[in-house]
Image 1 (tube, rainbow, N blue to C red):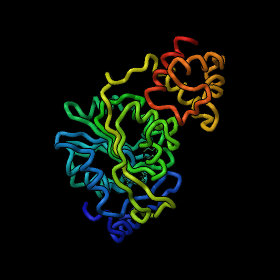
Image 2: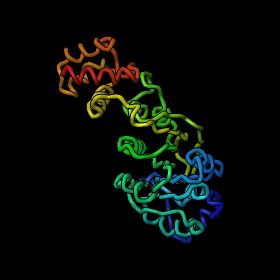
Image 3: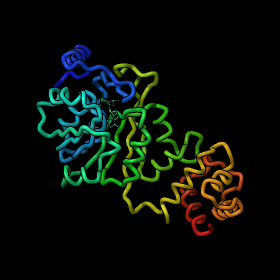
Image 4: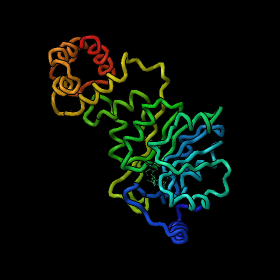
Length: 286
Ligand code: SAM
């Protein structure tokens, strides 16, 4: 169905289905017609692509994805939207809707069962209350996907795409950079949504790296180290790492010196590669 950005069309659909927005589910639907085609164009590189969409709303982005992809599997938690989607996506036979919480879906199985022989990407206007958990789940589970193109709050976009070793960086920045090449694509004003949120947004693209470029000896230990380091980001890293990982501070300081970092360094001053080196050295010393 076209015109899903048209306020009158949206109001008509809502009235007929007795639908009202849920704030707790992060329901801010896109009404700016220029945004969805851009997200779809960016994620879908050719017509043999399969797309996972997270959070369909009334299907405004799903429409654009379905026009360009071989298949779209869209996951939406709100069962009140399912009858609406049956109407707004009726013309497409390449869309499957899964009425589930995305964090409970086995995405490995989904990709295997739904997208055989296709390149797969994720495209979404994410529900903001669970942006980081969704992105972390997508990255950490090492799904066979090419890219993640998503709309997030502008502040989250800055953090997710920051350079490791700068003030904007956090533990999630490190994870993003570990698994992908992040890029901030374009900003989207709050007026592009209904209802309008209190903040602006941005679309980012995470191009997933090949597994063999990843070099940590023990990934679980690396991510525990990064999490501890950023748990008290304003303090020198040795203290939170020592207490968080239960390793004597003297051993942490020794490891820092071995990789050429000062004992007074803070998490936000540590470059990306140094975290991996530190994790490898500390893993041997502890
Ligand atoms: N794609 C639509 C658009 O751009 O207008 C809707 C985007 S809206 C920001 C986020 C959507 O995610 C809502 O439809 C909401 O119901 C859905 N959602 C929220 N939490 C979810 C979850 N845990 N799993 C799947 N969908 C979820």
